[in-house]
Length: 183
Image 1: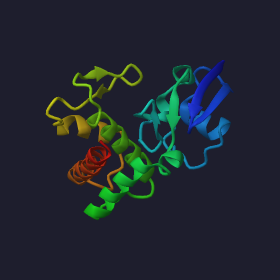
Image 2: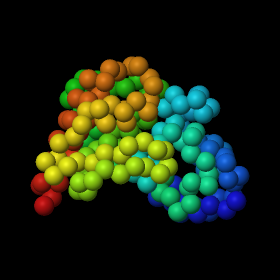
Image 3: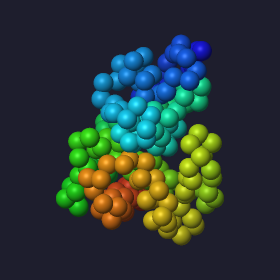
Image 4: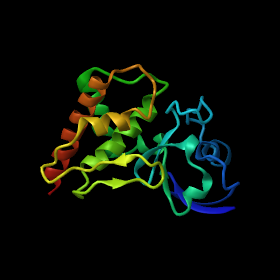
């Protein structure tokens, strides 16, 4: 099947099996060598990518779901200004994920930050993964339970959830301060 999508800012037309997982497409067809995919579909969470700005397990996303999608891997994300907010939060807390899950946890945090800085007050269900996507309400508060659910996409135990929540809160503060200065 032919699939038109954007991967790391490049418009691509791929001819792949409709059920081929995104992780294999990225490794075999696109040549991404940094994607960590050890579990081969068992959900370890080391193959996280941003699919339309949502963190997803790339080993669980079949090719047919990629039509007209925008995929961003850690390779391209780490070159953005948004990455700096998360990197600053890691340094400020003195906690950093291990090398095996660093990329995935960083992309999960970015997905959370996208949701928390989103101006839509309603909650929506994601059709790709069936997970609850949360957005900030009018008071811009957020629910730790939803954040923990999102952070649980990566099963590495190198950090506990309280450390991860602290990183999300700090990165969110950095992101919001940037928005205030820009306006």
